[in-house]
Image (cartoon, rainbow, N blue to C red):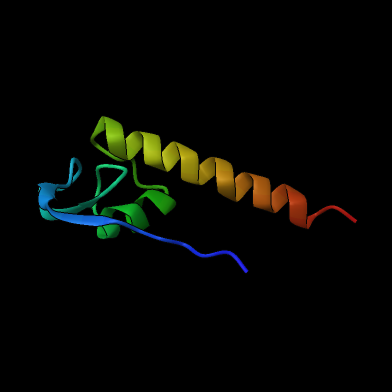
Length: 67
């Protein structure tokens, strides 16, 4: 079984919303959940996370359609 570790640095501000508590990606958990949606992200870090999320979702979609 895989483990997921998310590091949150409460001294670091989110590049997307400016609140404290950014993850290693530079944005907070709340903004990461927004990146999964279709609303465009404002910051470069947010756009990069959103692009990566979309790639992961598309890959999972394709894999689920395989026989």
